[in-house]
Length: 445
Image (cartoon, one colour):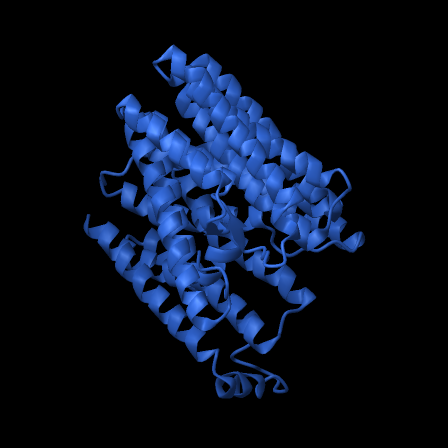
């Protein structure tokens, strides 16, 4: 517990420092002072020097750790890890974003987290095959894949798969440190390394796939996740079914961003709607039909939910997007992914059937309503400091991994319902704040 507290204290201190620097970088005089160093031979505030500095700190931290000064080593490593956010903040503030920086930043990331991973593999703490495969995938991604991408004038900047992978990889060192002290935390090293490997492969693959195909591929993956979720519900494995559905929701979150950033094909919007209908409509409807104890109520309730989601998706395409007050960061009605999570949360918990039915009907009403809900990706995440968001999502991911490994269906359902409530409450806070600032005028409903 003492070591876990140490990590939390160091992370909070680093986060506070980053937030303070972010505030300073909003000051024009501070930015002008940093820019004044650009013409000098050695600019101490250049993002590249921050990259070099965090690599050096990671070396120092690992050496201390190997010499059995574990607490000092892990503290230095965490500081080095937070440097990844600092160099990006400086690059954006001083407009020193360059092709060289696109290459250097991920290279420094890989050196920072591959060093401790390699050490833990050698001493037998991390699973051998997953870890070695991950290291090889990272090395190939940094060399061969990047050369192919550069040859075809494709961006070598980190994509979302790479960012999630890097967050997990950075967290491995502190996680193993806590595990080694007899912590109450479960050993999820095999699951984490497997996830890192899959994300590394996806990150590399999406660098050499034509940009306009990104959104379609992600929509297709969402569709497959929806079909997989239905299959696992039919097999009675609700834990695996909800995991598959939640994975599809991640793909759905990414495909919209990829479509906006890189464009897409003519079939893209239709494929996206089909995937949403399957994962957010058919899958939860099948869950309701299978798990509702009253057979006379199961069919009508499932059908009502499916029709509501179908109407919600159809209205979004034909009506909502054409409204004069439409804004991409806001939805009319509860988003279908949030509705799906709500249904999953209700049916994974041992609630009385009356309460489950009430939750489903409430979800139906909110879905077809015109109440404004903030988009998680385009609205909420842009208003929350990135380091805080990364820490929160990492903690959620670790806790979810533990719940799935422990096969604790009840706690999983409760946690999912908590996430829904947190989403709604955070969205309301964002709306009120932006209405106060005059950015969301007319969206107070």
